[in-house]
Length: 109
Image 1 (cartoon, rainbow, N blue to C red):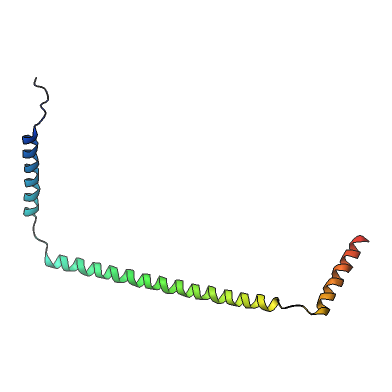
Image 2 (image 1 turned 135 degrees about the vertical axis):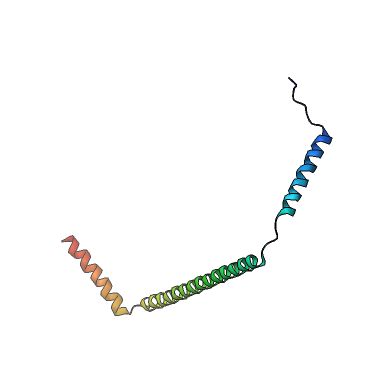
């Protein structure tokens, strides 16, 4: 029984050249693409891209609308906080102080 023979460079180069030639023959034997099929593929790709662009634009518009609503709510909240944060008059401050004092006295009894 013969042992394994390590292929030398010439044998490896020959095998590589044959494999390359088989691949080229396979490509050459492939029929040309049908123009109608190619046109249909191009139309399908264009339709898909148009649908994606429409969806993307709708999403962007939705996000812009949500951002505008959020900013409006924030501005409204800040306006309400500013209105609520107006300084109290001396009478209002005295009434609050008296109410706290009365509550403290009521807890002690």
